[in-house]
Picture 1 (spheres, rainbow, N blue to C red):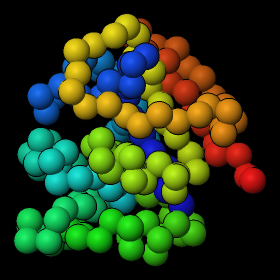
Picture 2 (cartoon, helix red, strand yellow; picture 1 turned 180 degrees about the horizontal axis):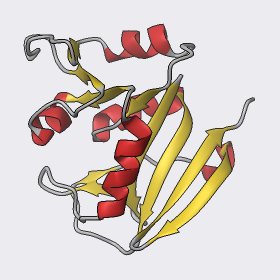
Picture 3 (cartoon, one colour; picture 1 turned 180 degrees about the vertical axis):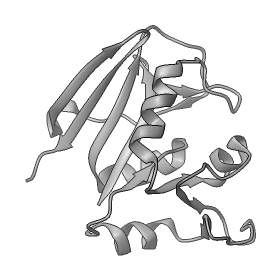
Picture 4 (cartoon, rainbow, N blue to C red; picture 1 turned 90 degrees about the vertical axis):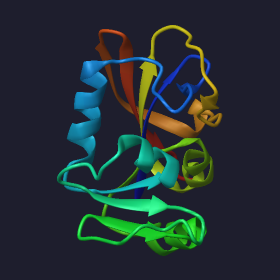
Length: 158
């Protein structure tokens, strides 16, 4: 099963010039809590921006053929994102989709849960989360923090 975790503002902004446009310590804490011990999926640009594998997680890095790095115990490179999504969509394991913009757009329809940190305000950005209709989801939990609200959604069955 795929779940998705993202922080975006009211205009769906998620990044600016390769950086997150805000610094919310509690949001980073929530990200860690929700992803530790799991496989996480991200694009190569996002992975390279972090600069190293995140501890206690196995990172699946989606990239173009020829851009792969060396697979290690904690990192696997894939060049066919659609195949990975199809092959794992019915898995009992929760695989966390962690960005960036292109990965979110492709993976969103496969995600049964969304962990959305809705960041207060509007921010300068050049990367945006794809539009999603909240009416397609049930809210499982809402928690208010300083600077953002964490909303956990479950996709409605058709």
